[in-house]
Image 1 (cartoon, rainbow, N blue to C red):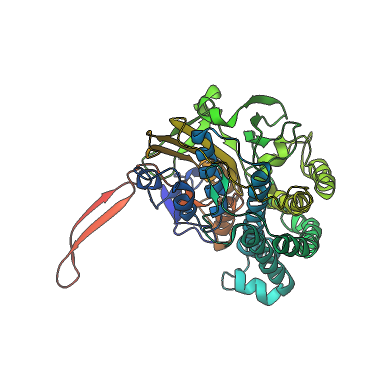
Image 2: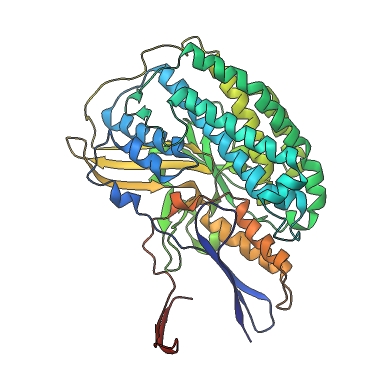
Length: 478
């Protein structure tokens, strides 16, 4: 008979989710779904707030990448004010966003995924966790902790605090960088580079141990999307929104302010996360499915733009990709390390800008436009904040298009692919279920950011008698 396997909760991700796997009468996988089971509603909370408050409010959406939300909100404010912010403010926003990427990618690789990658998918769960990593690979655990600390210290040196900074504002930033802050940041970079070089050196061994997983972890054709610089380089703050297919063909490139011409969201009743897709290709059989984040960014760019990252990118495409495109989602882990390397190098270059200590960091203006779109590359992919305001700058409409949501179709397809590969005849082990969870971990989803669809989540209500007897029961969903 058909049956359903439930993984609840999905572990070592940010947020709350469940996976259900439906088996047919023969015990083969008929379907698998990734259910996001939390709802927060920032798009409604923010209505009625001032545009000048939005960077501080939306930073609270996420404790891992508050900087990216704050910067996107500030950029939407820039557009509504109709101002060009001072060049130094752009440099400082870039540094803060890259530092946020460093600490977030370090968390994902070293602390959420390294236990699987270094100890094995089948390792006993009591050891296959952060504490097991500390016990068996202490140098890796310490390196991850230190790399996160480096990222957070850089954010703090620029923005005044590392968690939920209210430093980016419409028109620029609140405070300039001090000479002491610049020196503190510069002193951190060599150690960060040494740690990430060491992690990159572990990858050949990791890949050798996981040959069975590599082709099953989201290895399928899709579009890839993200920002690219004017010269086609790897970009995290500005540029064009590019869509590239699995053959490396650029199918579309447009201004990020016009993202709604390319991306449409749909909802399903079984998840609080929407399912965005590339609208020109439609939603038929996943034709409009696209992936964002570090893997996508490395696939769509022409070059990284920093010396060591360019060498690693060339090797990545040669070793991991067919025809230069890397289509398997297992390779997100490698891509994160290359982006950390790039971010550390790029921050060093920005510190050498001649105007980096300029004290004119904000352009002043009132409301000049009724709407604005702000964007940047968050650690998990492209992030859009889309606001409408009245003449006083009071927000009347908010749409937050989150990177994890844009990976939703791909994550669902990935867990179906992994489940179908490893579950045979209805038989499975804890290690197999962990492999399915790791199919989600590869994307490093941040569900607290991404939940905003009004779904009808599964619900079970039981009426119990005084002795605990079930008198009545009602179910909704699954």
